[in-house]
Length: 321
Picture 1 (cartoon, rainbow, N blue to C red):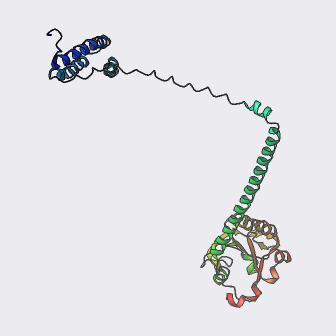
Picture 2: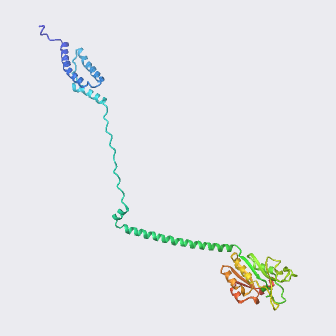
Picture 3: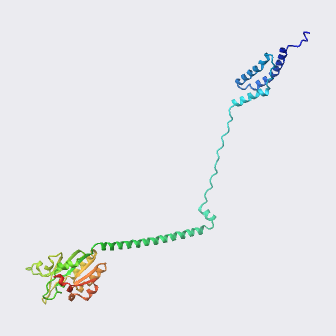
């Protein structure tokens, strides 16, 4: 029967394809409904896939089953995830550091530390001890400095020649000669006294006559000193009622010795008169050496005792003529 003829293999193969297409349409509708909000590009990809599935049916081959709606929905969900903007994580809140605790006041520290008073007392004692040691060291340094200055002064004196001042009491020297003896050479006496020394000044105190007819430089108390390096101080002689004459220079010599002693190391007094004893003591108190040069007969015991060095002219007269 024609009505009961089994359809050909092509038609039979086509029917299931139509049924499968009919069953797949709802899935396609569902997937299209889910992807209405998605872009058009993914939808085009699904239609192309459907065409690829339908192509074997036309050639008489069995069409593969259409992918399930869930499988078709996975690419759409992936597309939505790719297109959807990334979620922005909220920025972390900044951490707020707790405010530092206020430092305890000195009063609180003392209350918190029971041994604070004892430590303070020990510290004060240590400071006082250090101050005492520093004061002692300063005192030692001052003493050391004074010693260095004194040593330096001594070295200077040792390195240079002693400074000498000569003071000659002319009447005392000339009256010490015995009658008929030759006068002394005052130039040789000055050379003897200044040997290895630096002469600052030599002064001869000579009385002069008030006779205008006699020249001063030719008088017996002045003439022996004129040719040499003496500073001659003259003074008129005093005449007394008995006819005696005297020239006294005690005050002038004493003042000059004391005044010049600040610039001298040695004072040589050519006189044995005890009137100069007090001046000698004053000069020696300033650290100046005093030498006494005189004849034995005109030298007082006091002047011998005070002198740092005594030179008796009687022993050297042969060298001074």
